[in-house]
Length: 199
Image (cartoon, rainbow, N blue to C red; front, side, top):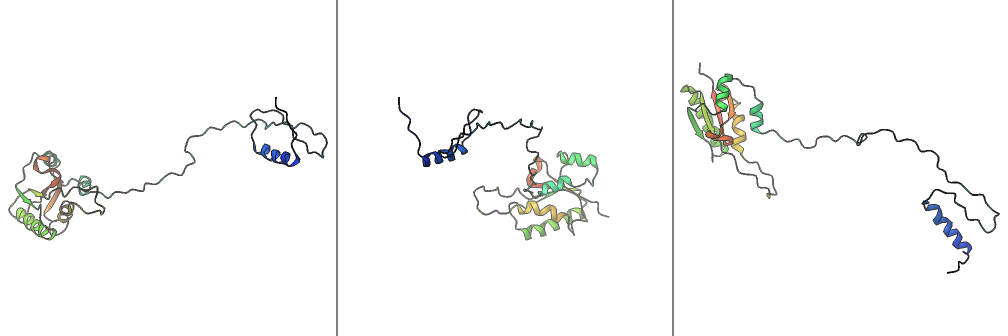
């Protein structure tokens, strides 16, 4: 059995500092160590008192709501799907299902923007003059996105520009409706253009 030795005054002071920072394992009266020059002390009970009951809460109710940080621009297809239907609804349904066959077609795939714009203007105005109602404009789907490309590049320029050109003069007066083509007529790489009757 080891014999306890008495603590020196500086050791007692150090022990009191450590004891003040420690949390007791069991709630029981703790005897305060007496200073050598002081008389006997009373026992100090450690009773924190009754604890307030926990009020009801919902997880995350005080958190700041996050705003949407990513706003992705709408694609040409999104704009076309949101556009109102100006042609006969029954004919438009048949058009979307690929049941109507285009009377003429133009393939802009591989052309430069300047050359494609001129060719599209010429084709649409001539088709309307001949009395055609439904034509097909093939733009191609554009190059695939390269996930390893460090520089974001605009892909499918003709695919995104053709619907805009069709809504601007001189073509806006000739075009009644623009819609993405059905799979059998080119799908994402082509547009149906329904023309107005020439007066």
